[in-house]
Image (cartoon, rainbow, N blue to C red; front, side, top):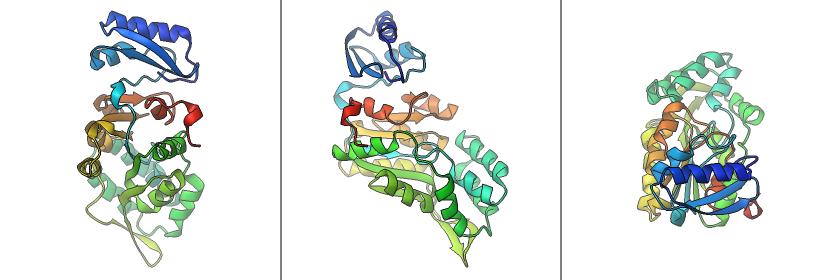
Length: 285
């Protein structure tokens, strides 16, 4: 459990719900007093998650096996997950067509449109935009999500691998990954000639299948699936989220929330450090 403010009443309510659901609640341990706590139980995690839904006031709850909570791989989406904006929407603002493109982005992230078709369609609308607008957009609009740096840097300090994988563009993911501290990044490449966008991206694109492929490649490389953590907000993150040991929907679209085994609704990305049993005194800032 994590929140800006957790009281003993919230802990008691959660324990009572677990008991009523037959989940046999046991010890309670504070990670950060009044902010994050562990409640251990000895029964069905699916039943426990259902019992704890909506507990407390703006409390995020993640249910998982204690034995595998410390992860050795983080694979994360970028737009609206590791940063606060959708880069293609902000880039479109420099072309004067943000509302048009933002509507398509929203529908694609909700799973209402084919991701690949929506990406090609939006990029085509940016044809002729000066290449310089990309760097200007990144510098003026991109804001790192709260908790992102602490999450990535703390996990890396503990030996985990970290990968930023985005359906966006390398011109954004490269600098963002470097600023946050990711080991590597994967994204789409905008095609540019004579100082302007051509309205195309290289293929094959980074889509939902590619995100899952990156996760599976890491697992094939020797990382235990149970020790993997995936986080994202859109429909194109679902296969990646479902394939991880802990898949988290972060302030996500309804279809993504429904598909994920865990979600963050209220807090920032630092909740994922609490989920691994790491108190704030041990975070790398």
